Structures are given as structure tokens and as C-alpha cells.
Amino acid sequence: MNRDEIFSKVRGILAEMFEIDAATVTLESKLVEDLDLDSIDAIDMVVKLQELTGKRVEEAKLRKVRTVGDVVDLVESHLGAS
Image 1 (tube, rainbow, N blue to C red):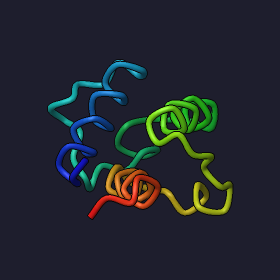
Image 2 (cartoon, one colour):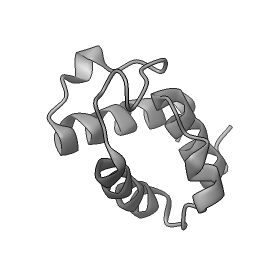
Image 3 (cartoon, rainbow, N blue to C red):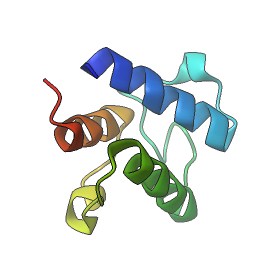
């Protein structure tokens, strides 16, 4: 899966799980400020990402995630995509 496919998948997950208009989600969108996600939403998102990648998301890496682009980077690194 390439970066564009990962972004599309992440955007779809965000839109579906949190009733966000997918058209408004960009790589620069901030999860808390722009998309209004809270800590419970973050946990739900992590569960979905773990299902997508088949790998556990480390808490230390999760704490660094601030934008949709950060989420895409995290998924990309877990998938070993280039």
C-alpha cells in the first residue's frame, strides 16, 4: 500500500468512525484542533489502525501523533511501505 492509499484509508476511517466530512480531511489536519477528536476517539482510532496494520501501536509513538499526516506516517512505518 503506498502513501496515497494509506491516506485514503485513514481519511475513510476518520470519516466513518467520527462522522467527519472526508473532503475536509487533509494531511495537515490536526486531530484535536481541526477534527475535534478526544482521548477516547484516539483509543478507538488506534484499535482501527492496529487492525489495519496487524501490529500493536506503541504508546510512545502514539503520543507524537498530532496530525492526519502523522497517522499516515505511523501506518506507513508499520506496513513497511515506501
